[in-house]
Image 1: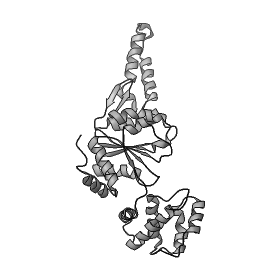
Image 2: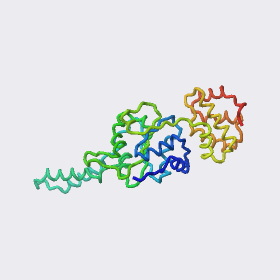
Image 3: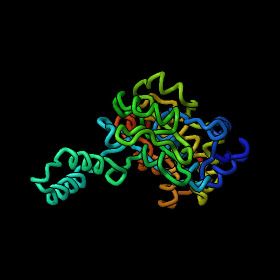
Image 4: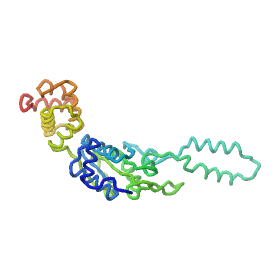
Length: 300
């Protein structure tokens, strides 16, 4: 399959045009995943842009984004495929209605029915099989894999290694177009070594202040540059505190949009106090921030 990106710089530029400011490690991993034809695993705190990266790759390459959202209890029928049992039952019922009990061909007739009902017509694609069978370029996002049971990782190995899915009744279905595969994890549990071996690895952490300011400027272009700098600086101060959940990049962007909506032109103590709930999602974190932040100093 032709390469999607000609170089690391081309990958970085394409992602930026798609609305994603990529650090050098991110752009390099995206380029290598494309050049080597390898899936890549992205780990890091929630809200730092792991899922958005997949969306940006899809936008940048004009590919369809196919998403498997993982959760506790997700199984083969939700991830790979399942048979349309209702439609199969209708076919069996129809075959029975036309069957002549006195014909003496019961076994042969049943054999034909069995062959008929385990065909592509009765197969329901789920995200993994849909990505493999797509006749156009796709980005396959396996999101928050750490939330799924460990057994689901076994279902992924064939897709990650060979870009194929085996359906016992039909055989092995090989990808028509090699999907660009991204797996994300918030690292709430350890993923298996077998899965990790099949992937390139990327860790995305909270960005440095200069990069985060570029992200804010791209996503909230109406925000004054000086106020944007103050926003990033205050969010950085919050991340240095011992909080249950530090504010992510997504929350930084939400806060910047909040300030625009409220017509704020500077971070005065009253404005910060009244909008901390945009950044922090636990009352004890808000109490900690209120107590530790000197809202009368260092704000533009």
